Image 1: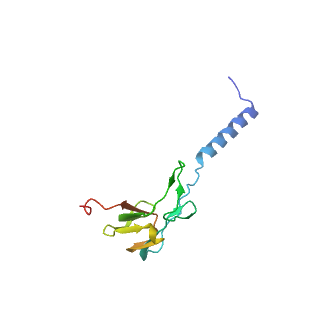
Image 2: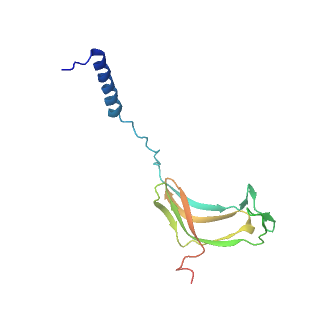
Image 3: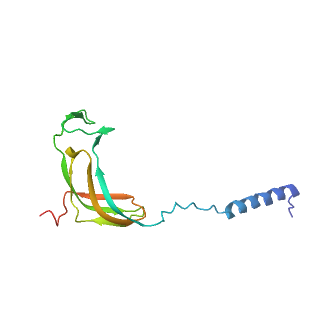
Length: 137
């Protein structure tokens, strides 16, 4: 019969104790900060600013694109519709399907009133470029 020397037995017990301790400990998971708080009703407004690089875009100025081609825009206008506002969870906190925005770069900074909205936090706004199929007939 084999008898384990006392020092070897102590090392095995110590190793098992370390393994049990390491496996038995659970590290607390960090929860993301909560975006709870008072819900505020606000009149939501949006500003559209046109930039080229770090400075304001100027119509009728000549610029160079990433392919080295010179270009100039004398007029830049487009329509945005069907604004949807979402929070961090991707839940819709507001939508403005009937609000159509005519954006015109010649105005410098265009500011639009979208409507009233009640939310704790806004994470993302999305639009339809142009008109939706029901409006565009």
